[in-house]
Structure formats: C-alpha cells, structure tokens
Amino acid sequence: MRRLSTIGVLVLAFNATRGAEPAVEKVSYYGQIRPLFSQHCQGCHQPAKANGGYVMSEFAGLAKAGEAGKPGIVAGKPETSYLVELIRSKAGKAEMPKGKDPLPELQVKLIAEWIRQGAVDDTPASAKAAAVDEKHPPIYFAPPVVTSVAYSPDEKYLAVAGYHEILLHKADGSGIAARLVGLSERIQSLAFSPDGKSLAASAGDPGRVGEIQVWDLEKKKLKHSFPLTFDTLYGLSWSPDGATLAVGCADNTVRAVDSATGKQVLQMGTHSDWVIGTAFSQDGQHLASVSRDMSVKLTEVPTQRFVDNVTSITPGALKGGIMALDRRPMKEKKMAKVPDDTPNAPARVYDELLFGGSDGAPYLYKMHRETKRVIGDDANKIRKYESLPGRITSLAFDGTGARFAATSSLDGKGEVRIYDTDADKKKFVCEKIAGAVYAVSWSPKGDRIASSGFDGTVWIHNAADGKLITQFVAVPLASLKTSTPLTK
Image (cartoon, rainbow, N blue to C red):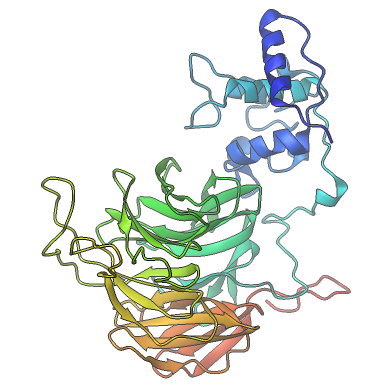
C-alpha cells in the first residue's frame, strides 16, 4: 500500500494554490485518513456519542447525512462534502473539531484529495472487525484479563474493565447493572469522580490512539471522549476538585486535561519510559507519576513544571520499573519546612505516596522534600514493607489511610495482601486467589476488598480477615455453538 509522502502533500498544496491539477498520488483511507478521524473526530462522532447524528468511527457512516441533512462525504466531490466545509478554516477558525484548533491546512487538503479520488475504503480485510457498540456489545467465549476494578463512592456499583467496555456490577456481586460500551479496545484504569456522578477510564487502541472516557453514571451514557496521543493511556486519576484528569502515556509523558472540555492543561516529559500511574496531591497543586523507568516524579500542576524526583536519584536505589501508585488519605496539614528555589513559595500540604513495582516491595514516601537535596540521599523515604511474591501490579489505600491492599503476579500466580500502613509486615493474605492479580479496590465503607486479574474472576473478600465472601466471572460468557450468553 502506497502512502502520500510529505513531498507529495507539499506538491499537492502548491499545485492547488496555482490552480493546477493536483499531484496524482493515491491517498489511503486506512493509512492516512482514518488516523486523522480517530485523533480529531471520533471522540464526538461515535456510536456511544453521536453528536449531530453523525458517526465517523466506521466507514459506512461517513457518507450519511446527520442532523444537518447534508451528506458528510460525497465521493469524488469535496466541494459538496459537508465534512470538508466544516473542517476548512476561515479567518483562523473552523467549525470542527468543535472547541479545538482547526486542522492544519495540509491535513484538510489531504482529506479533500482523498474524497476527490473517490473516497475509497482500502481497509484490509484482516483489519475489519465486527461492530462493537451499545447495540452490539462484546461477545466473550472466555473471560478477559481484568486490568482495573473500582467501587463507586455510594457503594452501589463495582466497575470492572472489559474489552471495549466497562461492566457496572452490583457492588455485592449479584449481577451486572449496566454495560458501558465505548470505542477503545482496551480499558486500562478506572476512577470515579470525587462527587460520584461520573466514571472515567484511561483507554485506547494500542499503537493507534489513546482515549479518556467520561461516563454519566445516572444516564449510563458517554459524556466525553478525549483522544490523546497515539497509544493506550494508563493510570488515570482525578484532581480532588474533579476539574482535571491526569493520565500516564506510552510516549513517556504525563498529561492532564480539563475534565469538562478535554483541553490539555499539563504535559511533563522528563520520564524515560512509559508512565503507568498518576496521583494528585490533596490540594491538587502537584501531580506524582510513576514509570517503568524506575522513578517517581513530581510536577507542579499550574505551571507544568517538573519539580523533583520523589525517590533517590542514585542508580540502583529502586530495582525495576514502578507499576502502581496511590496517595494516602490523610488529614490536611501544612509542611513546616519547604526547600524551594522560588522566593516566597507558599506552604505545601503534607502528603504521603505509596508505590511499588518489579521488586515486589511496597514503599511509603513523603510526596514533598523537607530537606535540601544531597546526591545519594533518600530523605523522602518513610518505610519499605515486606515484599510480595513477584511484581506489584496494583495498590490501594482504604478510605482512612490506615490500611492498604497490594496485589502481585508471579508465574501465573498472585496474591492480595493487606497491610497496616504504619507497620512493616503484612497483616494477612486474602484466601483462595487462583491466579495473577492486576487490580484491587476498597469499598467506601472499608469492609470489603474487590480484586481481579488474569483469569477474569472477580473476588470479594472481607477486609477484616481476608475471608472470601463471593466470586464471579467479570463478563457474560457465550456458548461456542450458539453465541448465546450463559451468564448474566
């Protein structure tokens, strides 16, 4: 398959300004146009959120007329294609993408040229998948790997990450209350908003596009879909006021967006590997992030300024990448001493961070440095806990911060352990865990712990003693012969 080269695009643009015939270069829908639509358009024009009655996530919907009554694309006629009219910039502004900067002129010309050439769908047969949307939810013949679970603040739901969807289970495990089917294949992390009205997910299609989803819990509808980067997103967290959403990215950056508009408000790029987890400070002024690069870093949110490494910068201080992060719930208190190179820097709120990864040990650190840095010191370290077998995959504090849960994976096996935060050794291990565990969540009341992982089973344990209360398969399973769901 040929792609329009950069030189070809420039020749096309130059010839168009001269009124000459455009350069004859075949434009690929699958290789060139589809990624543009995915990055800039599909957040608002997909089955779960079809603004204007127009769907752009599947080729068949491109030529249809939305609420405006005009066909989006007329093959061979860019001048009468409503889509081209909407994306063309006039005096530096364009109607679409809504609320965002206009597409670069070369991208607009590329889309117009594809339409002029006949708007051909050259998607390979191997890349064409069956439609997955609210009317056609995923069909499972085997349980998927579960990457995230989260209790709603009112303890009505337990959200579980599936394929192309979030499954809202009743919190007691008695059944599925709703299936929130979206565009992204992979759902990597889940987090309820501080007010409990929304559920957000970091998601995406590997190597193609990342997506932040925000769902309205009452309506069970997608409120927002914010495309971000060109790969799956990880480690989503809400700011305490609910105004900002932060994610880790596979391009080694930490990013944050306005939770209502999707406008990017932060990008920090000092990590040297994938960023897997994020956590805001209690006052929302700082953002901690963990990465496969064996570091925990701190960013000032209003200025987007990288502040410091939370951990020691001495090589070998941490063994392997860090995969999990949580901030300890605490009573707010001001730090007595803050070394800062900014004159008259305001007092910071004291915070503690829990993190872990490849070496299997949970660590508790101060978020902010209270002493002047000395090369080789580890002044923020409070405690290293007894290690789990294998690597730590997730960590979560209870609502008081007095206890935390840690999960691990090693050779197909896993553990869910409970620790007292102010003690070094584990309190107990939850019983009857059958495989590797990748996700854990505390109920708001603190009396139950939900976990899941490789085999798609969700376990709910008593948080007082680790006894198993119930377990269930995360998704409805179908018969291989009939494709009829066997479980609900």
